[in-house]
Amino acid sequence: MKREELSFERPTDLFASQPPEMRGQSRDDVRLMVTWPEGNNSHHQFMDLPTLLKPGDLLVVNESATLLASLPATSRLGSIRLNLSTRFSDELWIAEPRWGPSRPGPLPLREEDILQIGDSTVKLLKSYPGIPRLWLTHFNASTSALMSMYGEPIHYSYAPVYPLDAYQTLFSRFPGSAEMPSAARPITPRVHNMLLAHGIGITGVILHTGVSSLEIEDETVEHQVLYPEPFHVSAATANAVNAARARGGRVIAVGTTVVRALESAWTGNMIRPCAGETSLYVHPGTGVHAVDGLLTGLHDPVTSHLAMLSALIGIGQVKEAYQEAIKHRYLWHEFGDSHLILKQRAENN
Amino acid sequence: MRNVALITGAGRGLGSVLATFLSGQDYDIVITSRTESELRDVTGSIRMMGANVTAISGDINDPSHRTRLLHETNLLGGVSLLVNNASDLGETPRPELARASLDRFRLTLETNLVSPLALIQEALPQLQHTHGLIVNITSDAGQAGYQRWGVYGSSKAALELASKTLAAELKPLGIAVVVVDPGDMRTRMHQEAFPDENISDRPLPEVTLPFWAWLINQDPPALSGMRYQAQGTLWEIPA
Image (cartoon, rainbow over the protein chains, first blue to last red):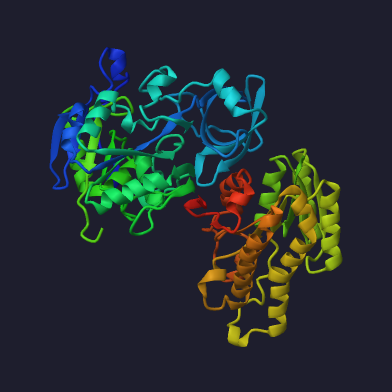
């Protein structure tokens, strides 16, 4: 697949810069577009989700909680931000130096450069192989302490920074994500209760997200390098997913992170309990095997997320759905509207 | 207690990249290679970073050389990470097994299988003391049966089985063993394996650093017996 196939035009004002609850609404007060297996799209409120699914379906959410991963740093280039991405230890991270929320890198930094955060220092070890914007970094102090003293949630130009609570979901239990796994954000206690009342199961995996979906830089989509992220699929979750499939229920991933975790745990005909580090990149060449649908937000052009959506339903349907979303003025990004994508189940699956 | 790493074949390629990385991660480093000049360069760059490194050139097949290496790690408090990275590709151009020199084959087995085991045997008291991790570097040639890769490949296959066996046998001692396939990289060994090819499309050995960053921060007993592909998409912790 060529890079430009994942490109699309979108009006510049279709962003949610504010969470609905900051506008005096409820978190579930967002819209929901459904792309059906037959290819048609329909438009709903997020509150309708329980009635759009069937008893026996299983939602799989990400239980990772968001960190205060954006740190102010000084370097020989002046004041910059250092966004932590993937943790190897409290002192060793993949991190992204940026000019600021709205100005990405790569910055003209070199190996062995030292950044200062408070009284602590960070050494840039190596630029990340294949992703020059990211660095392997080594801290001379505990990053947990630095985050609690100086950190704020990672945010970008389209939205100001909000208190950390705005970046957690009902299911955020295990801190570790650089950015909010946001797909479950509109699932409020009342939506949760309605889902359960409709006989729809909910189970969780953990995948600690790094900095968000990289714009695909390689001309061939499948060649883009992803970096590793820690994940965990428990035995209980594997059982729940396998049981849902066995009884004919659909497995709906809530968020692209869940697709990556479940596909990483896929054996060819079932999910196994699995933990470790995954840099699995789901694209049309790999296909999607472990899930029947994806509840997610609306994604930027030319990102690895769009490659995953194309793996689910084909690039043609993704583009049609996105045209619909633009026509109906859906809002992009983590505080925006939702999109449920249901794929056709393969006969032998 | 300081971490102490012993890395063989550290004069260039993967070994030198790994040694340099570990030296920045609070490891005291003992490195070895047959080529003294290369070892000197690596040592120099590690010292510039302010880390503690001991370099001893020599042949890993020489028992007295192995003893000297472990004497050094012992002085530092005992080896906690032993990386058997030094490897012999065998004859080049790579022969078919049917025509391979048997004497040369024996040398490859000595370097890739017997000497790593000898180093492990002799290091056991230290590794037991540190609850250390043994990393044996392997190759997909050890699993695949590619034509003209029989000499090197079977030495690595044997090393993988020895590693798996050791993982089971050393478990009661609190010593962990993993094998790591670093994947194709732009190294001198890779060039020697493909003398007529332009290998500039292969990644530099730095491509494996995220894997090492992850590995050294895991609890070794949890991983013992595993085989990892450093350039793979999944580094699994067994349930």
